[in-house]
Length: 95
Length: 495
Picture 1 (cartoon, chains in turn cyan, purple):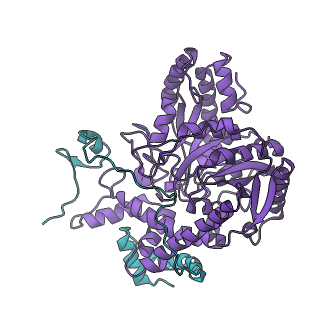
Picture 2 (cartoon, chains in turn yellow, brown):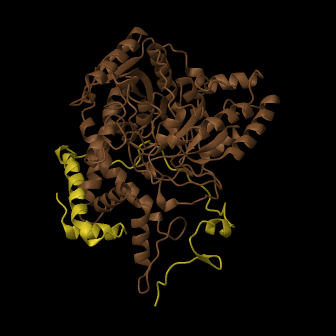
Picture 3 (cartoon, chains in turn brown, green):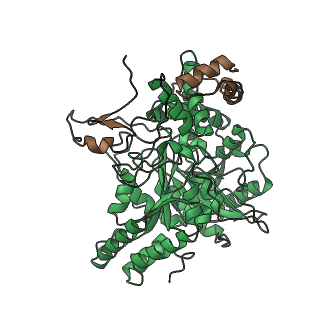
């Protein structure tokens, strides 16, 4: 499976990583190389095998649906690059 | 003045309880050693004031007889663990200046036990790497050198700062994390002991996530006994990590009898990989003979899907990383890129991540996005998860046949030079994990034990793989191997 320049552009967009136009070809080659390595998995007979969902057989614990934490917005915001009036601030998203 | 090259966690504990040593004295010795070792670049943040305050408090607890085993023990913390109000960068530019407002469960447990925090330890960016060269804050240099050479070597990765700090006697123990071998490979490269516990033994809460179904934290220390003591303090159920196991934590140290008579040790034929150096093969054989001499039965076994572990890992780990790392968006913490007039929030996200992530992290996030994308999910991700099931079943079969532990080499080579793999194919670097990655995929415990020195004078390690929740028995076999190997080599101090 090989990735072309347009697929590399799409993958970069899905990952939300800005890639310069001239870097797309080398990126496509690098990703293709890794995908080739993964192609070995096609040799394995997986007929009737369940995909793993939990590596240790355990049931997730249930808990009461109650608020057990919170009330410290200032601490949540303390590391944000930009905040306004107790909220995270981002570039304008609605015209 | 304590000889830091000789002291262990067990030894320091006993000396402090006997009143022969105080934690403040010991901590000050380490702080001095750390300041003299800046050239190794092992510590990314030093916390001397916190260390001395914790040490003084520990001394009071020891005096009044309220001292758990880890009380007063100076430790380093891999920079993947969130530490309250102390820089936590995970080796990444995108977390530059991040000071969490909370403490990870594991480090909380260690501080509650009275341990002393010396600082944060450098690592590969987001734990993605095998040489510490992907750290935004520069690579860690190993305290080890090849005989007759001053070439800088890697301490391994991703827990390279932890390995270098323990090996260079800059702390008595360090926390590490292991997603594909990131505790065991650097431990082997630096001649120390590293334990990757059963998935769910230690809480992942507050540990920066890489691949959540594979990540486990564990201790990196000088001896198997120290690993037992520190692992116990790090283990236990945590309601804040839904995958942490609600099981009693054994007294691991009490399990160290050294008696392994009648134990069945498996030697998997598939781990005899092409191009494996003769020295590694010999080390492995000698290790098996030592266990046999101690009364264990050595059994040839087969783990037929071993070959597919690395390709499966390099689908699953990037897929989970791609999802986990989507939180770095320039909004909640860390770096935010500048945008120009007319650009919007998508430009801000994409540029922040392009500026903030290094090339290896970008590569893995994009591979992860690809294998999870519409049309490819079944072909790559689901297939890899099915292969993962088969890899786990390989282990289940041999354990059902009565195998207690499995002995393998820890790494396919000794430590390599910094920069030596710079132009290599990324897959060549991934091969460092060939013996360790199966253990993460199957959720099993593994331990790397220093076992010998190669022709260049560099340490080599052997790995023991245990049954699920079988850390106590696994560490006892590791203890027998350690006793039989008599490994006591130390790096010659040049820094």
